[in-house]
Image (cartoon, rainbow, N blue to C red):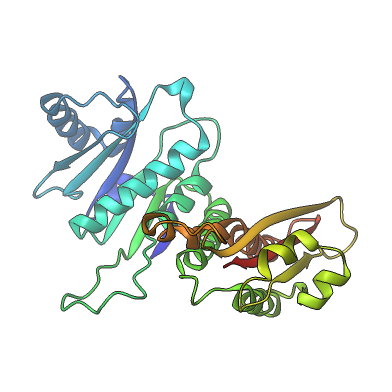
Length: 307
């Protein structure tokens, strides 16, 4: 899926759908669709009882028009809308488009002081995510959205949003992998692979190193498993002098059976998510290498199986 800025006149654009954000009890942003289309959309919304409450979504078909389908997304009260609102609701719109098998859309943000391009681009990438690696191939070809345009978008902000979205999806895919695929050793291999691709420093400490350094809590949790624990240290350094130095730490319990107190089945199913913090660290380090901020960042992961 491509996410790009559109700086032209909307009247000159023919596209299969548009996504318009609207504040609660405030439909002024619909005017950006153009007089004829906006009038018809407002009439349809009036019939449907649309109020613009957060997360409310309505579809307005317009057969024969240059934009034949309009999605209107409610933002809620204007004074309560934050960046994450645009990110989440854009993802909602993308998932709705995929269900409707709509190939392209123009996203029309409201005219506000801050640039929303990054959050909308990020939400587009997040909404397009799926993890179907282990599903049987279906007869029907999987549907893919081809293009998202952001009206008045800033290309640099869009690119940053794409990077952040893709790095989050990278982390999500690692989280979704089951415990027999991602364990402390294979997680450390993922870290080494990432370091090589992104030119990060990487040091992996094995079970003997962990004991020598006195990390006995990590060792005690992991020593019951056939797969020994690992301690992972990734480092991003900017070119030139770093303005600051920070560390981020992620929990890397690749699976937690409950130790001696074995968890029941329903809780076992989600235990692969106990490594989410560690996967978030890897996603952050990947994003840092692409965005290249002027700070030094250390990514720390204690990885173990509690089995």
